[in-house]
Each structure stands twice: as C-alpha cells, then as structure tokens.
Image (cartoon, rainbow, N blue to C red; front, top):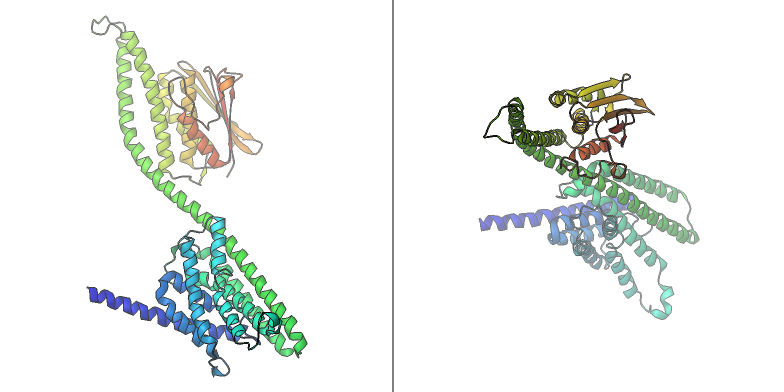
Length: 504
C-alpha cells in the first residue's frame, strides 16, 4: 500500500511537471508569434497565468516544470530556433519563484479558497494574481542587465539603454495581463479543482474569451500596421511608449471587468446558496409542523366534544360538576386559543412545504373561497355572518396560491376571534390604483389607536397569543411586493385590514 502511494505521488510529480513544461512552452511560442515586436519582453505573456494556476492548484511540486518551461520558451525563436542567452537561466528561476510568490501571498492573505464576495478581498486577490505578484521575473531581467552594463554606476545611470527599462516594464505588464486573463480561464475550463470558479463559469467565460479575442485581434492589427510603416530610430521610442500605455490600459480593463463580474456573480451565488439552505430548513420545519399539527387537530376535536357535552348538560344538577358553567367558559376559551394555534400551524406548514416563495400566479378569489371553507366550522360554531363581495373579475397576483390562501386564512381567523359570537365579517375585493385590493372588516372591538399593528412585529393579543398570524401575512405580502394597512371599520365598528397585491 505504501509503495503504491509513493508510486502515485511520483507519477503525479512527473505528469504535472511535464504538463507545465509543454504548456508553458506552447503558450510562450503563441505569445511570441502574436505579441512580440522589437523587444525581448512581450505585451501579453499567457504562460504566467498557467504557472500561477498550476502553483495554486497543485502546490510547490510544479516549480521545476515552470522553470524549465520558461527557460525553453524564452530561448526559442519561432524564426531561428533555440538561442540561449546568459540572462535566461536566472529569469527562468525567477519566473518559477514568481509563481511561488503569488501562491505564498494568496495563502498569507487566506485567499486561496476564498469565495471572493467581499470587495476588499476580491481586489486584493486580483492585484496579487496581477501586478502585485508578477514582478520578480521582470525585476530579475532588469537587474541582470544593470549588473552587466560595464562601467554603469549611480552617477551615469542615465546611460542605461532605455530598451532594457522599457523591456522590463513590458515584461512586468505582460506577465500581469497574462495572469489576469489566463488564470481564470484555466480554472473555468480545466480540472484544476477550483469549485468557486467552476460555479461562475456561466458568468465569466464569455467576457474572458471576448477580452482575449479582442487583445489578440488588436495585436495582429498592430503588427501588420507597424510592419507596413518605415520606422525610424526617432519613432521607435514614442511607439514603444504607446504600446506600453495600451498594455497598462488593458490591465486596468481586465481588473475592472473581472472584479465586476466576480463581485456580481459571487453575490448571486451567495444568495442562491442561502435560498437553498432556507428551502431545506423550510422543508424540515414543514415536516415537523405537519407532525405537530395532526395531534393538535385531534385535540381540538376532543375539546369541541367536551364543550358540546357541557353545554348540553349545563342545566343538569350534578354534584360531581358544581362549577359546570365555569368549566364550559374555560373550555370555550381554551378552544379558541387552540383554534388559533391550529390555524397558524397550518399556515406555517403551507408556507414551508411550498418552498420559500412559489412564483406561480395566484387567484385572490380562489384564495378567499378556500380560506372561508377551511374556517366554516368556526363561523358556524360562533354563529357568525360572513359576506364576500368581489366587485369585478380580478387579475392574478404575483404570489403562490398556497401562500396567499394562508395569508387570507390568518386574516379571517383573526377577524373571527375579534368578532366573537353572532359577529359579522365582511370581505371586499376589487381593483384600485393598479393593485388587487382585499379588505376584511369585523364587528369586534377594533385596534387601539395607540397600538395599531403593522404585522412586522409580534404583538400580544387579547387571547394571550403573540400575533404570529400577522407575521405570516406580512411575509406573504412582502414576497408579493405589496402593502398591508390596519385601521378601524367605520361601518362595522371593529378592525379593518386592507392588503394591496401586485398583479402578476
């Protein structure tokens, strides 16, 4: 077993480094064909993106392959074949160290597996894989040139060939731009085990490919234009300055586009995960509430039978029940409270089992009819008069049918409790100001002006409840984007609740 493990590690080491050598060399060859012009350095060096991606995903074992790949890629000329120069070996070592530096910085800042949803951490990540992390190779190239410039010292530093300075800047910017564009692309397309990036493939892939295509097209057009112009030595420096400026502009564009897309997609995915967890929690809560609700309903039926028996035998003298009337009153009060619990439990069950938000269109008239039917036994028991007036054909509203029905049922249950025996409940529905409006009034005591509810907080009710029903209603209304109003009914004298629902 140990031998097999060591053999697997050795095979992984060889395969990763061979992939690094071949991939780096091919990308270097492509870059020289597309972006090189009268300079050792190149405006886009995609191989730096491959090096950083390999180090981030596979760790330090890829360092030898990156160094060898850089050495071969830098030494190869598409027109003349291999041409080795003394600076290439230290630069190759620096290129491998550069990828290691990027990995070390990401580990130090704890960004290696960060979801990149917070803007400061996202900016830090992009800067590390871009200009802040990709300077060692360019700095090594410039240092080598300075060290081998003969009599150059601090007093005659201006004698240093400007091509070396420009070349170093091109090198730095080319490595930075190549890493910014190719590293995300490799994470999106190849099995680098970066799930954070794979989740964003839909959002990132097209913009990345578009930027790379524009850059390659622009570089080919630039090459064609420069080859047609008879460039004098006086023109060379301004042209290189413009190319340097355009490369810097591309880095700014890449940072901006990547940052924007990563931020937006990260927030969207974060919300999706939160909704998914909420749905799972809702399903679990709904299942639990379903198990609780069934015994509550059976308990309510038994309590109703007890109340009926006491009412039927209230005039019978029984020494075992000397306080028959008091028992009946207490039983009726307990029954009302239990009914409220059953209604709220059923509403929560409907909301949770139906998901966080059912986006199907809902019919208000059907919701009123179903809620009224479910509470019919309560209306009959209390001898209440329920009237429903729907003034016109109503459009469907943006809500789930189950959720809307739960909201109407809670409002009707509250009205029934407030109206009491022989009470009146009235429902009016119609269109007003582009909204579907539903009003529910009752003949109860109404709301105190000093404590008018808004449904956002649980309020202590007269029966000892905590206003959970109104919170359920508020949840459904908020999901729709509508409003809820509480006032006093001028005609019936009790409470009046008006809900405004957006049509779908």
